[in-house]
Image (cartoon, rainbow, N blue to C red; front, side, top):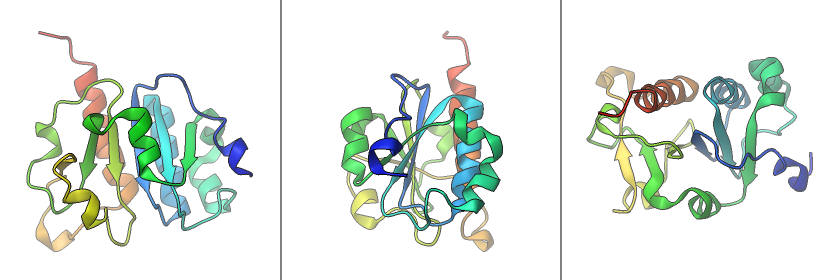
Length: 166
């Protein structure tokens, strides 16, 4: 698929944005795409990708959901920042202190996740502009599978969005 065609899948105003910074595993991306379809989120893939977009593992994990997915591939995370706004991004890191459940998510927010093998770069997580949160897990686990982490975070955001305003 060429770059122009990749970018033709973007909606006007999605409920949420899920941003995968340099994802490495096609099957995880396929599963995350399926989650995005389920909640009405847009999926952003920030290059470089560790797989080809036509990878059979991505197709298999996403099954027939991928055709319903709103998604976009970009060369740099700054392209996401331009569209979503830095103040609307929540970055997930095992190095963060606050729990993802303490964040107050709003429609149009973005959830940022790093690559499976190393997480978000230090230059990103050390910026005071980035709101960092974590999914609490026991130290023995080190980290969660990326697709599982995205699902946990995304459904918490959706839960909050569906709460009536007080």
